Each structure stands twice: as structure tokens, then as C-alpha cells.
Image (cartoon, rainbow, N blue to C red; front, side, top):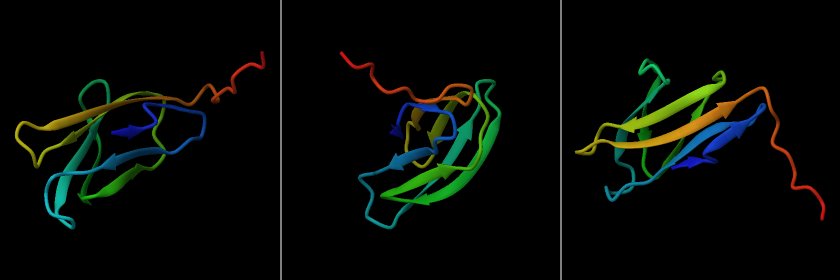
Length: 89
């Protein structure tokens, strides 16, 4: 799961990763851009969190390859806009 699914401004891109595997097991994480190019790879302990360093605006997909079939999660990054607060009513 990506938290949140849309990231604005300078917010951190983070994926919370959990599994039915025993605690301390690791999974291979591969983050790809909208063209399918790998932009970040890591081994992540579960449960755990994968935090991406600075990534530009765009759509990304996290692929966890240790499971069959692979598990994916999508996130949209919009660096041009900041998260707005709800308008008062």
C-alpha cells in the first residue's frame, strides 16, 4: 500500500509493506516509472516501509517480486501542487 496514493509538493513517497511471511523476511521491491523503467530497487524487511528519495512528478508502480503472482501498488506524485486543506463551510 502506498501512503498516501497521491503525493503533493515535497511530501515523502512511502510504501508500507506487509506480508504473510514471517516477521523479518525480506522482499525485493522495484519501483518503476510510467514508462516501465526501474527508478529504485531495494530489499525490504517485512513488515516495513520503503521510502523513496526525491522522485519527480509522475505515476509510479511498486512491484514486490517475492510473491507469485507479483504484488503491485500505484502512486501519483505531483510536485507542482501542494496538498490543500478543505475549504471552510
